[in-house]
Image (cartoon, rainbow, N blue to C red; front, top):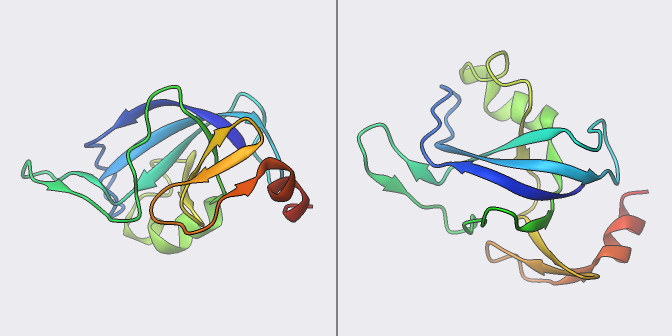
Length: 129
């Protein structure tokens, strides 16, 4: 999906093992059940821990509010990996990224989180069909 970051909660604790959420508003659906206008919560390892320390995952770059992003995310992966710890019922809009988020720059998709390869929006669209 293509969307934009609408907010970040660096300390959202949902008892699912993740430390933070990035809210992403869906602007374009490439594949899946999301609808334009939906807000998904991308659960991330990086964030503030309950004791105040900051945890930083090397493959999770910070995402600025308003940033346009291409997100390959999965609700079912969230349910399998994190929900058994209690998160599924508390967060029906939660997802996890399948690959690190791409920043959208026109037709170019700029990798984040150490993902090695840039690509294009057309290539991503073709790959999701």
